[in-house]
Picture 1 (cartoon, rainbow, N blue to C red):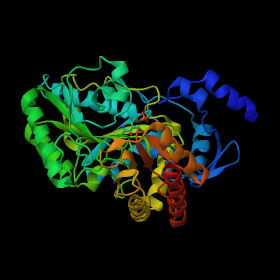
Picture 2 (cartoon, protein in one colour):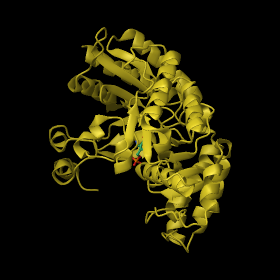
Picture 3 (tube, helix red, strand yellow):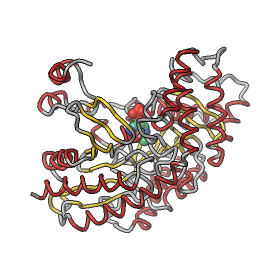
Picture 4 (cartoon, rainbow, N blue to C red):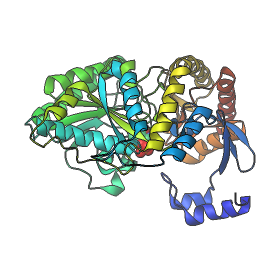
Length: 452
Ligand code: PMP
């Protein structure tokens, strides 16, 4: 490894950071992470913290998963790469497809299409949705509906269904035919409705209204995250996603669950859709499928959609989507090992138990600090604190103050993430009760710094 001065000096000079202003990394140099162990990360100064972000909501199993590392090394030795485009396959990806079929059987998903990450999975799912309708003789179904505040990656279709201006405005014009409805976000919504159940009904009515306005026969799919992650852990009322499912069914619209964050246990269930008792038509996965050990993703396809493609004899079912790294054998080997560990450790149960402990602790912090305008989460290990400078007016906190909270929490032992006015928590699902305590006391220190 190059020495500390070299790394610090050259970081901003030669690299642009994703989701950052290039000038910012010059003024606020990032923490250079050099090691990780269990659920902890270590920076270049030797400072060790609990990673309460879990990488980027993806490192569910922590950083020391020996079977995953061994599987990757063995696969690299035996077959480091081969394509899965028409005509060739590899044993790892076949075994993985079989395992995913088993894992997602309760969600009614029967086929996997492999990608290199979440944005790819979103892109492919939207393309497959349009194609599905074309095969079935409804080529006019090309539009997409989604939620404001939703996040669906940064490829062009995904950015077009994204519901946050930060990821859209500078890249417009985006795809035509993408329309957004209000998110079921009780703290801020156009209806001024604070009751989650009533708000869910209002948002469903808005969806129904938009479908009527656009014409159901023009809409291919509705895409949503079962719990909106990057938008600030906006957790819909339990009636919302089943309501969306019912409306989509009534209008012949496909439901795409973007489970890039929620699949594989984060909500305390094996998928976010299952958490709400819903079977989607397509499901986007990535992140915890390989836990950060390899870039990888999969779109899972429901039985009814599978049949339409597989029974097509017109040629319209030809899948003209694919990546060089679709079904990468090393990624597949990593995913197989991750799935085995995920099942063996039953991480969803720990996510539910530790999630309840974390949420209870956060409720105590919310009672203690006025700066916490809204606390969201309560379903597994994804939580957000929305910070405000004036609780009555719900004025979003300034970036400098929330930065101070993050810094002080880091100094006190926990890496937390700042996203707009939100502090986001999505720690590895294997953390212990003591780790949760560390996160809570570090946050307490962080919030005290903001107050002081
Ligand atoms: N969809 C959702 C719900 C996500 O949270 C993300 C990433 N945070 C993506 C898509 C994009 O995934 P990736 O960054 O792997 O491209």
